Length: 374
Ligand SMILES: Cc1ncc(COP(=O)(O)O)c(C=O)c1O
Image (cartoon, rainbow, N blue to C red; front, side, top):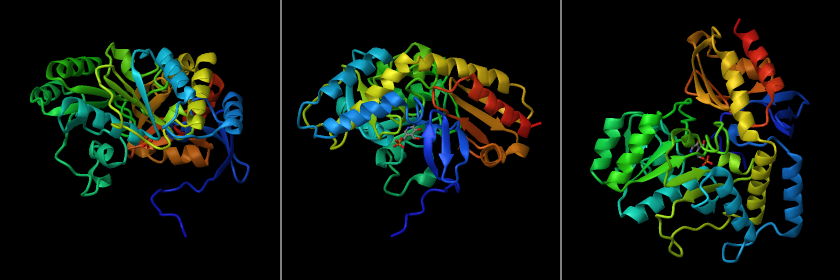
């Protein structure tokens, strides 16, 4: 059997990693400013993470959600304390798309409504509901195209208000920072007006913090810059530092009923241990403060570079929109300077490094970037 060719691959195979560095099968070292697609939050092979997972695996790696699991309760408490949503409930699943599916389902159970409002250029995953709420017809099959999802432009307050006034929508979903789109942010006024419109129309506000959450923006969640609370927050990627996991944080307006949500693997002993290790390192090493500081340093030093058309983002979630003549810069960073970065649209480089990078690594990136854009 061969692999289904659904990914466009770089001809590089990482075989070893440590912190924010990765080595390929030929022994070449790379600086990781991509974080395996915003997944590596605390750094590769962090010793705390490795030893906690090793120890847990020797005890018990998995049992089902039919029995008590105190690691899940410990995770709910620790996550609640760190992210400031300690009066919320936690539901654990296995990926970002699955988190959003559960968020939509819960919003629909709660309101009795079936429509979801999403934003232009949004990305929410590739499963049926999540991809339907993703503003990219090229990745939706006929099965996914549904009248139950509508899109509204980012930051168009009048449009959100008039749609929610119809009281037809179960939920509106907003990314903390739009990642796949190329790093675009909802404004403070937009978050606040949407929160108000949700309250007035009985609509659920979902913050998709799958890419922007877990400290990447310089706060635990990016929407926390704007003084509002969401009713459901979906998380994944950085939560497990590579262990596949997703979760939703659920406000107490929702009534739980046995069987309404469920999953075989979600919240396994290994997954919870990975997530507990991530939270421990984020707290012990002050990684959120570090993301804010190093992100600001990168932004400050990228400003004014002649290759840049626009610079966007917060913390260590940075979008560098390039002028047309620099469109091959991402490949050059990889193949000439051995630096992984993310891409978006045709001309945006996305920086999503592990949250533990220091000024020394920021300088390596800046020197490489400057030398390619003189
Ligand atoms: C904002 C956002 N939501 C949802 C997803 C889907 O997550 P997953 O690939 O874990 O299903 C992603 C993945 O890139 C994302 O960036």
